[in-house]
Length: 297
Image (tube, rainbow, N blue to C red):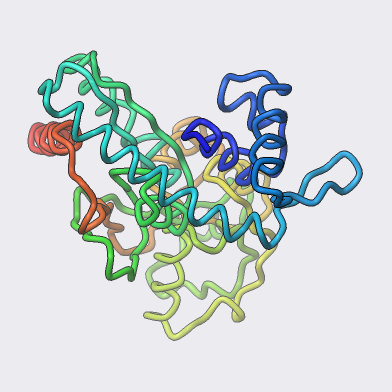
């Protein structure tokens, strides 16, 4: 069994699709299929159920996936330790971030880090808060950047930045014309929300609790898995939405959204790191640089 086979297996298991895994790994479809077939054949265990032209991870595959992630995480930690022997001249830094951070906060900091350390390969993935926490816990990512709160005793959590949330509606929404105040009844509109596990959604749910409400009290028109999808739906008049002010600003600037003056909590951005896994110099250098960016803003 090789690390490459494990990487391929994990990619296929996460996507449950050979072609998409091959594209993500920059491999041919036949190479990916061969690696899975070899892995299963060598150990006499089927890891996927073949249903028509689709593949579905079975129970054996689910058990093996957890172990494969652990092994790959340990291998990557060992690689990072060796890379540190050469300072910051070469190596790899794996980062996983939730959508708002990955799309808006992270890119300028990645560019600055790459300019300072061009020999460090940056591997960046995106997921919601729950997915990012899992990636750090299982060693898939050294650094996790999230907007939601995480309760995992194996992870350390520290505040790295903060940003306000915005309540926005389309220009023809009743709230856009009425300009309601802080006592706005949130039950008088349909809503477009992010998916469960999203930091934005969690922050909105906390605000509802503060107002003595819960999600069941609202009319939820749709739940969408991404910032851009939520913003587009709100612009189209599907309902009100809460999103990062950075995300909302793009729609407000072109007149497609109206921001409602409602005091929403400032949402904090958190850094997640595993308490026991190896911490690379590249990771420390990136965080130090990110903090200098904050200080200079």
